[in-house]
Length: 211
Image 1 (tube, rainbow, N blue to C red):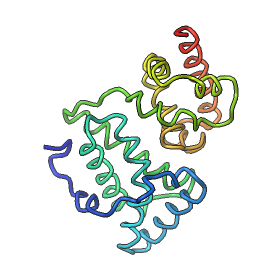
Image 2: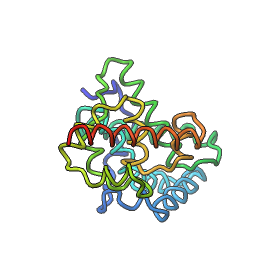
Image 3: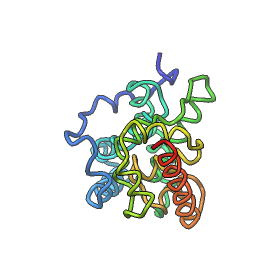
């Protein structure tokens, strides 16, 4: 049994995974690919929806896998996200981007799974650690993070609040910018930047305490 009693999007999960497993989506090229696929899909192209799944899946999967107990559950969450996007495409309004919109839908899917009885675990530090060197500009906090050993970083990340973990995961693991993270979390970009700075300072502090 998966996290969904019925998973209408499982057919989408049978589509081939991209060979690059999502390294492109965090780039300008990747974000443009997501935007193009969505425009084709919204115009009524079945191939557009298939392409959207292929190009957006890696980031959505990473995000879902941080909070779910298995790859299968994360795949179901991604499929459900695309199915819901199909039903909401006409209501989409351009702003922070299609990927941020999809991540917001995926976030709702995860919270609904939790309310329905599935266990929504704390953010898996391992997923964050794998991508930690991708955090923005190299300020003092980012440098401390990138120089840290995986074990120390994992322990320090686990000491952050759930809100801080989610924010840093959206920035680091999913690769969203401050504006997009703000759209997902319902906050202004400036507030996201301040919260990110505080979270990184706390992370650096935990790393220094453990050294």
